[in-house]
Each structure stands twice: as structure tokens, then as C-alpha cells.
Image (tube, rainbow, N blue to C red; front, top):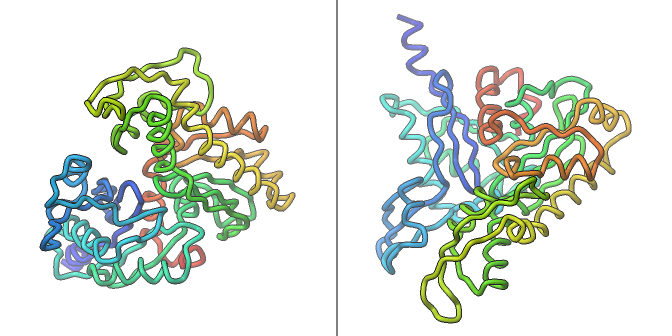
Length: 339
């Protein structure tokens, strides 16, 4: 009976509060939520209309009475109230019959988060129903999620490319030794495609269409066989909808500025890495996580630019939230990595 009540009350939650997607891990249940970080509101009343996938379906198609927003930008909270409502929605979704129990929550934040931003994340979670809130930096959570020995005197390098930020970190002895947090990530890649199509083809496309093109034919380096993909948008000259065929070499050109920025930041991080840890990275390689790790040829570009082994983690999209799950399993053992 004691075990039954203990398990019934054990509802600790790990949250990867991402710019593009929010993932929620429930202790004992694994990942139970993977939804876009998007909210639809009634413009007049401010009432919530939809959250997650339902809200994403409205993006770019909303009427004047509906406002579709992304409450997180560049990895941090841009709209405090909407983020709080979104968190409350996801927490209630995973609580089920435990609504009277306030959970402990571990939330991931970017390495470059400021004290004000940390307080905003913590207060949003507390107002949404958390009993205790722990914060952990995203690259540290990713490293734990993929099983790197973060507590040992061995250097590990992680590149986590999310929707709003790219986190680059060298980790050893339960701490981040050197790091870079840049606001060049998935959103910036999408914007590069939007601007390129506008400039070269006089075609206006939305963020969703740009993301679809990036996933379908985007690459960071030449492909053995170049790909093509249909692109629908609004002709800026005739102001009527039209479809064009986009080549992967064009998309690569559109992504090049953002990709080069990420590679430059990796180089700068390596330049600041102590020699002993640099030797460890030479032996162990660089681990890539996050949705951006799936961009075709990015790992090869990094190998060419750094002459170091580069490994894309298994299931890179869930590494960070899986790390929060491991922390929840033994919070006392991970006290040094929590903020």
C-alpha cells in the first residue's frame, strides 16, 4: 500500500522548454508530450484558443480575430503570461489524476541565460503549478541524456542546435568549462530561406513552408545527388499564388550564412578550451544534438573545418529532455549541475 501511494504521488516532470517545441518527460513514464511551442489567442478577449499542434495548424492561416504567437524567442521567454498558460496546459495534460499534487520540475535553459530570464522561467513554472523548480543548462542536459560522463575529469564537447539558440559547450567535472550560446539556429535557417526566395524568385513564403523546404532538401555541404522540392508562395510581382521548383543547391546558399556562423562559434569555443580537455575531445569527438544536427552534411562540414571526429547523437531531438529524466531519477547525485 505504501508503495502504491508513493508511486501515485511520484509525478516529477522534466521540461525542455524550446523555442520551436516543448517536450515533457514524466518520471516513470518517459516522454509524454512533444508539441510545438505555439499558442493561438482570441485578439479581443485574450482567451486561449489552442496550444501546441492545434495552434501550429492555424499559423499563417489565422483570421483577424485570431493571433498565433510563439511565446519563446531565441531560447528565452518573450511573453511571460502566454508561456505560463502554455506550461500550465502541458503540466495538467501529464498530471491526469494527480491534479492535487504539485510536482517537482526540472527545466532546461540556454547557457547564456541572464538572472532575469532565469527568474522568469522559474516563476512561470511555479505559477503553473510546480512545487519545486530546478534549472539546468541545455548542453549539460543533452550531455547527460546521451550518457556522457559529465562528472568525470574528462572533456566532452556538445553542440546542441535547437530552434532559437545553438549551445556549444565543453563539459568536465560536472561543470561547463567553455561555452558559446548564439541566436543562430533553426529559426535563423528558416529565415534565410524566406529571404533568399524573396530576393531571388520574388516569392513570399511563410515560416512553415521555409521549414518544410529546409527539412526536405536543406544541406550544409554538396550532396552526391542534388534534390528538388516544390515551393508554394505568393508572387511579389503579380500578387497571385504560384509554385516553383527549388533546388537543394539554392537552399544550401540560403543557409550558408547561418551555417558558417555556427562553425565559426565552434572554432572559437575550441580556441578557448584548455589543452588537456582539447586532447580529450580529439579522442572522443564532438557530439551533435538538437533538431539542427539532422541538417544534411553539417557533421561532414564540421569534420572538414575542425579535423575532429563528429558524431550525431541517436534521436538528437530528445537528448535534452532525456537528460532531465535522468536528473529526476537521482536529483541528489546531480546537484552540482543544477542551477
